[in-house]
Each structure stands twice: as structure tokens, then as C-alpha cells.
Image 1 (cartoon, rainbow, N blue to C red):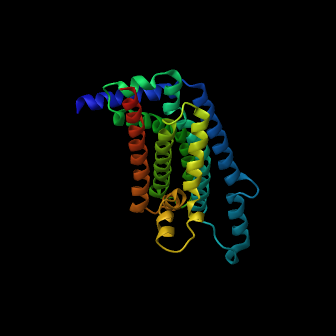
Image 2: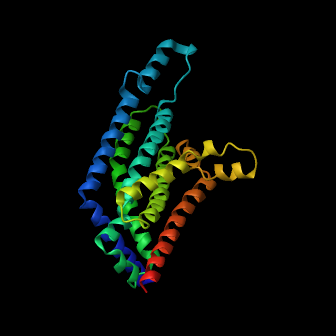
Image 3: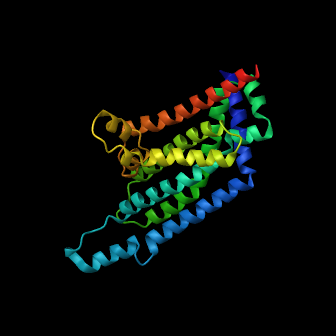
Length: 265
């Protein structure tokens, strides 16, 4: 067990270091911060923003519908961040194994004594950690905005929404890691991952068919289960779905590298 943890930590450190020394990763992070910051400012401070709408409702008095400003902001903003992440996450996962193929080090990983499960888990933890670091400045900006709300906004709703975003990201990155293990082209891996994620994101629209098949497809929706977290609803089915995508991605990646190991033997 100690050896497995040591190997996992070594892979994790190697992967995390590769992100923090990659110019492309910094470019992705800066673009994410810029767009996320623009979304936040526009949503709160633009002439059509939530603060302006709340002020207009106050001026109209009792006849206007009151706006729960913090809750409305959190729902809209996290949905925007979720949509933005659908573009960012495939770019983060595209090089997890594709770069190894391109540099000729994938064969070394495939034939090393470290199990493929440990390698895949270490790589996934590395990229999820980098995404979490990307998300932290955005969360700090949100917390500053919420600090001025009266009455105080429940921190549990805030945290649950961001836990949902991290679970969503981990599931997408895990599936993207598997797709990356199939190709030596990072661009192709990113496009294929985006296509798969888009399908899982809008599968609710496809699942509008009667019967068991429609119900089964609707349960695979990333958007539906993510929306529950954003609304402050902890649904175990959503947690199980995201964890299932994470485990599925790791399993398929390990099997993909096992196939390569078998071909080399």
C-alpha cells in the first residue's frame, strides 16, 4: 500500500509540475479568468445586471416581484462557469496521454511496474488540482460579492454549487483523459472530448422520448445533475453519476494502456 501511494504521489507531482510549467496551461488559465471575470462584472454591474434589476424592483415598491439577488446571481453565474468549463476542460485533458504518445514516453509508462490505474489516477488528480487552482480566484471574487449581501448568504449553498462544478470538471476530465489515451493528436483529442461532453450536456433534449430508454438517457445528463447542485440541492443520484463518470474514465484509460502494453509484449 505504501508503494502504491508513493507511486501515485510521484505521478501526481510530475503531472502537476507539467501544468505549472506549460505556457499553454497559463494561457488557458488567463482566458478562463478574463472571461469569468467579465461574466461576473456584467452580471452584477451592467445596466441590465442583477443589481440594476433589484434597484428597479425596490423603486417600484410592493407591486414588483422581489429578487433574491445572491441566489439568482449564484445560479446564473455557476451555469455560465459550467458552460465556459465545457470549452476549457477538453483543452486541459487533451495532452494527458496524447503528449506522452508524441514524446515517445507512453511506451515507458505502459511497460513500467507502476499500474495503469495508479498512473491514470495520478494524472487525473494533477489536472483536477490545476483546474481547482484556476477556480480559486473566481471563488474569491464571488465571496467578496456575497460578503456585502444582507441578509448573509448561506455558505452551504455557495460551497455545494462549487463542489458540483468540481465534480462536473473531474468527470469531464476523466473522460477526456481516456480519449487522450487513444490519439497522438492533442487537437483531435480536444475535439473528440468536446463532442462527447456536448452530447452529455444536452442529452436531455435528445432524451425526450417516451419509455425506459428516454428515462435512462435523461439520467446521463451532466446539465440536469449539475443544475441540482447549483440550486443548492444535494441529490445522491447526481453525486453517483459524477463519480461514475470519474471511475469510468479511469477504468477505460487503464484498459486502453493495458492494450498498448499487450501489443508491445
